[in-house]
Amino acid sequence: MTETWLPVVDAEESHSVSNEGRVRSEDRMIMIKGSLARRDGKILKGQPNSKGYLRVWICGKQRFIHHMVLQSFQGTRPDGLWALHWDDDHSNNAWSNLYYGTPTQNGEDLVRNGKNLNANKEECLNGHKYTPENTITKIAKSGRIGRSCRICARKRSREYMQRKAKQAKDLQLNTHREHQIKGSAA
View: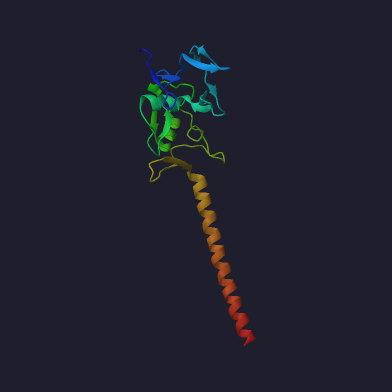
């Protein structure tokens, strides 16, 4: 596939971005100490942030490469959507690897690509294996799928019922004592 370059939105005169996820500065004339000087354009090297997303500085502003690629090749990001990497490789900013999607789709990508820490766990926090017999699968209203340990769920349910029974018994004892106190005060 041929590399295609389009202007970077809000920096059309000075920078371009390619469908392969590269950014370049354009040949331009700049003012240095009162005289014009020619600056040759060059490919800019993206610097990763703490999460691995590549960014460059353009016109004094930090810009994420994946945002610029999507904005130039696909248009403005719709409200509520994120700029997502299909393969979850934050350094792969090729247009074919990027799309606008929901936070839920981002989570689904993590599971599909084997990068979701919870989906890769083989046992619960208490050490019980996630087997078909011991796994409860839940589908939330949002469509997200989750799982929990059946052994731990049963234990939590028993503990909850015991707490409620104790609270009811304590309430009954307190009510009985109050009646006794009122009866002896009369």
